[in-house]
Image 1 (spheres, rainbow, N blue to C red):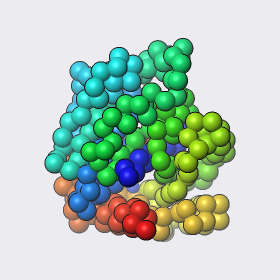
Image 2 (cartoon, protein in one colour):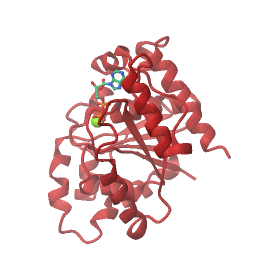
Image 3 (tube, rainbow, N blue to C red):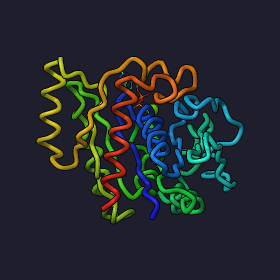
Length: 250
Ligand SMILES: Nc1ncnc2c1ncn2[C@@H]1O[C@H](COP(=O)(O)OP(=O)(O)O)[C@@H](O)[C@H]1O
Ligand SMILES: [Mg+2]
């Protein structure tokens, strides 16, 4: 079975895109076939791989009914890119019957070629995110280790309940992980404790530490393993990728 994981949090800047890129590369380095799906009209994930302003994107597949454009990054890592066209998809799909299932239908046609699909969600709880939550088999939530990281999460939980009741019965939040973590900062440690109290066994043991190499890598269209293989960022995303594989091996 293909694991379809939506990386979602309607708060921006929590590390969704950084995580999709580097977990994707991490999983492919462990031998798995991975498709990264950019579902954010800002297309940061596509940009990070050097696919800027692509002519055809996931928009065309979702709204125009074309084949999903897929670009090979390596033999084991592929990208379905976004572009700014996607910013009008929510409006254009709003009157369509079955509008919540559009992404699922698109991904159903290609998922058999992969072990993992990772969906990079936009920073909102609009129709695109609802499509991701409907198409996926599980949801991961990255949380930045800041004071307000839990604020507003109840909205995401509420949407998840509705999705489970109506659109995707099997879906679960199966992973929560901390990003931009600095053990020397008291607030970060407090937040880590709070998150462990709230999400218990769903919290990944790996915490992604604050690491400037993670900010620099995408500027040169590189992932963290290529840009700074010895960095904490590379170590943490390798560790998290292994934890994810383990979680799927039993
Ligand atoms: N572990 C980290 N350490 C330092 N900076 C990070 C880390 N993770 C992400 N960032 C930076 O934080 C910003 C937001 O990350 P991003 O992945 O784009 O978040 P999102 O997709 O949730 O909006 C980016 O500039 C990114 O480079
Ligand atoms: Mg992003």
